Image (cartoon, rainbow, N blue to C red; front, side, top):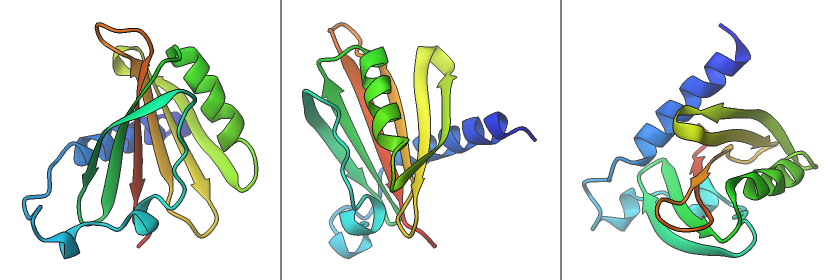
Length: 133
């Protein structure tokens, strides 16, 4: 299987799981700690946090940036291509979105999905981190 196909399948899986809500929301011990799933929060320029969803092994943060999707993509390409990050995947995905996958030694991986904001200027950015098992 090609690297691109594996990358796209991983993105679909992570964003699909990230959209699931943890049924035991009231039990904070069941929720992932940010330090375990996303110890470094990489916000794009001019970003506003819209939501945070946490499950037992995953954290998903939805952001809105005033920048267009291409500018946000360029920002993440610059940041995730430098040490200590390694940009593993960077590809267009369904619906015109841009998906990225990056790793850091000894830290949880980071999935980034960028898409045009519907009915507004700017971009929506999903950041997803998962515990290392």
